[in-house]
Length: 248
Image 1: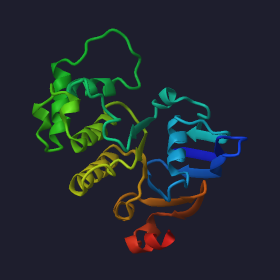
Image 2: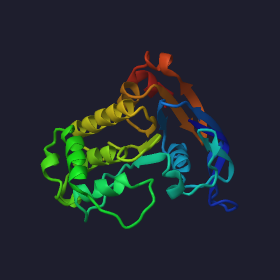
Image 3: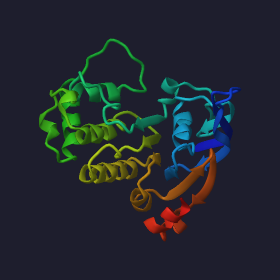
Image 4: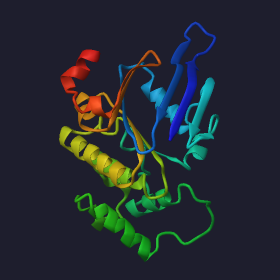
C-alpha cells in the first residue's frame, strides 16, 4: 500500500539550527495493515506522518501509494487516498457549520466540486444512521453547530467523516491525547472498529504504551529520524506495556 524509499527531511537546512527530522528512511506498509508509530519527542514520527499526507515534502527519496509515485504531491492531491485525524479535536471539523454540513463536506472530499444539491433527505438519513452507531445521541442533533460539541464528540465524528468518501489510508496523530481517559478509550475503540470494517490501511502516532499494545498489528519505533524497531504481528501479540517501556 505504502512504499517509502530513502526519504530524508530537513528543517532549517544549511543553517546552524539544521535538524534532520527523517534520515534516509525506508518503509513498506502492506494493504490493510494497522501500524503504530512510537518514539520520543523529536524522533520524526509526526514528520513521517506529515510526509505521507503530503503536508510536508521530502528533501530526498520517494513515496508511492499502490505502486504509484506520489512524491511531491500536495496535501489536496493526496486526499484521493488519505484521510486524517488530528491531535486537536477541533482541527478535523468546522465549528461554524452544523454536524450535517460537516458530513456533507466530508462526503465530497475526493470528488469534483460544482453547483449541486447539498444535503437532501436521503443524505440526512444516511448520516443519522452512521452517527447512531456511536450511541452518543448525536443522531438527533444533526442541525447543531459542531462548535457546540465536546472534544470527544467532535473526534468521534471526525473518525466517521474520514470514511464518508472513498479512502485507502487513515493517518491518526495522537487522536485521543487531548481527551479524558474514558473518552480517549472510546475514540480508540471506534478507530479500531472503523479500520476493521472498512479494511483500511492505518498509521497511528501515539505516546500511549497501552494503546500500542491494545491496537494495531505492527509497531514501529523511531529515533533520530530512523526506524529502530519494527515489530510484526506475531511478536507484537506477546508484548506488554512494560516491554515497550524498556525500549525508551
